[in-house]
Length: 460
Ligand code: PMP
Image (tube, rainbow, N blue to C red; front, side):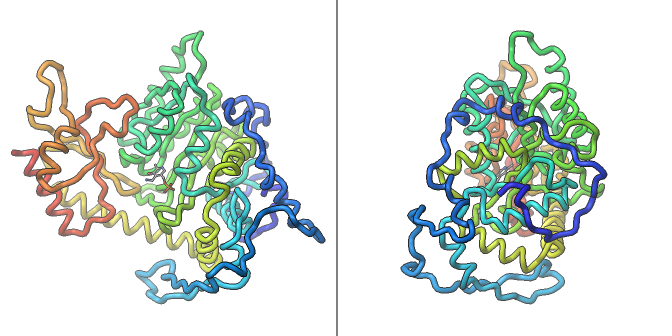
């Protein structure tokens, strides 16, 4: 589906703008595509799918199995209210009839059209975008799937890319396999630091191509837990426009923002608020943290040429995200509406905020003096700098702060506490004394005991 054939009006728009700006010319994006992406041919059958819905068409096109031989007749589905803390009732959203038929049959690569419409509306509602700006939404099997396809569509051997550092460990194997030149841009408690990017770009060697893209996780970054401040986002966007690179905004924790100050706008929203061109941003959202990770559903939003390239990849790989997962989520969203969805995500954020507060209490109790950290304002991670024992530091390196991999294998695992060593989050695999700690699943007793063990091992 493209925005031009979009029919839905599910939610009221906020942030109506006086004028609508168009994205950059298509040729700009086409030039950015990798050779692999440019050489992909449309999948012959999927390419003709849209004609099937033309009035009066008798389709003998696809090898769609006849649903009358499928064993499923109906599925019983019960869902909680959007905020079970206030209302603990259950609603029956059972799946049968036409909805079940759609769920069980092959469907469009970009997703079940009604769900795509819903997410398109959500994008307008949350990010202040308009339908006629040349962007669209596609649904994938989790944002991981869409990130994989995006990097394959854009990045060529020897290309230069910027990665927020430390970065999501799940993205490193993707970019490392592509053989590109990765430049790690440091971040701190205020998120990615554009000053270091600016100084690199100002002194950029004349014979070296400029970076094609920046990959960043703006809310509750995995692993650093940091949320990029508004002023830094503005500077990142300014640099992207000046030096012609794309921003890949990987935002699975957008809805898990629980900071005290109002949530900063996404990059996708920001480029609409700040005068200048549109179309530098490709967003990645996920249902994993707010509905269910096992459904494997995420969505990408951005310039049509780039989203088309993602779909072209999908049309010859996994064909589409699970129809059953999409229908389950669609039924939930139809039932909740936008207000219910936002009430639910607000409840999720509040849940993690309370967990964060409790975890902070036990960090103060057990790790004071042996570790440093900044409390996150979104998501479920603490990035903790351990003061490691001398046995974990190199004798011959000045200022060596130690290696959390050694701490993990020699102390933490034998001592009964598991954390992620920071090394996993750097493209250059540097030794680092930080660890990522996830507090999402811990009850109060496990927080107390887990951090007591960690503190004891560090003091030993
Ligand atoms: N990006 C980041 C930053 C993540 O933390 C994760 C999940 N841990 C993903 C992407 C993948 O999410 P999904 O389940 O939607 O594939």
